[in-house]
Length: 260
Length: 115
Picture (cartoon, rainbow over the protein chains, first blue to last red):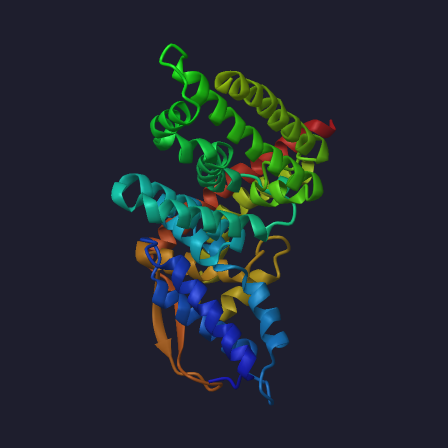
């Protein structure tokens, strides 16, 4: 038995773990026998060592042995084991991408749990996105992480843009009656004018406020909707502000006309 | 692009050649795993990652082309020695013949090119 330094021992344990991981399930190879051979190989390399083998010395031998991943012919690895390998030993961005996609699929299959699984998938996808400095560097991973991002972003965008409507639609009927009673408006005036005026006005005000906020802080949408809002700039914040104003002015006019 | 093509080609070639060389290395003798690696290490370009040899040995054993015997060692714990079985000797003879045919054919093609 060779004498290894502590970090070298840990390094060897990790390596042997990889050997077992990659060779387990490979029908043509006896994983235990290969592991014993690898240990014998390392012992033979350091047969004449007088002091404890250092991490660096061991690493040279392990480099020459190569990654156990290369030892198994590709055709002997089943598709599900390839996914597991990626999850267990692949780079972090790949691992997170697979987990994100897995959670999304599980969310669709186990329907009641989608309320929890889709947000979880989104969080993992954002974590995977954080792993890469430039989202443009993402290659095939984007197919795994973009679906949950797109779903959550679209829902968030609809919610964000239409929040005043969500609040006002249930109140529309009562609102119209209140306006009609307050200003003593006759039944001949179409009620939808009042409702449209309130809806458009509140939407306009909502977008105007956001236009102003984004004009001051154009990075907010970029960060919130990463990586799809990289194009957002003050110009687009100004457009949002103008649309808000554009909705508010006619709705205000419509409201005044309705009351008068 | 050319490098990638060469890498793919040499990887394919090595796969089959390694088995042939391992069997030839233990022909008429018995060697333990590390000794086989040391022998093959000397063939330039054949062994890129030395660990590849061990799963091949295990595969050859499962196929019944090699067998192992445990022998005491003066330098440490008992070692496992690999040797050819009669089935292994037969397949090796076929493989060597096949390889010789290919090599002869390839050499002939190269000579034709020159003339």
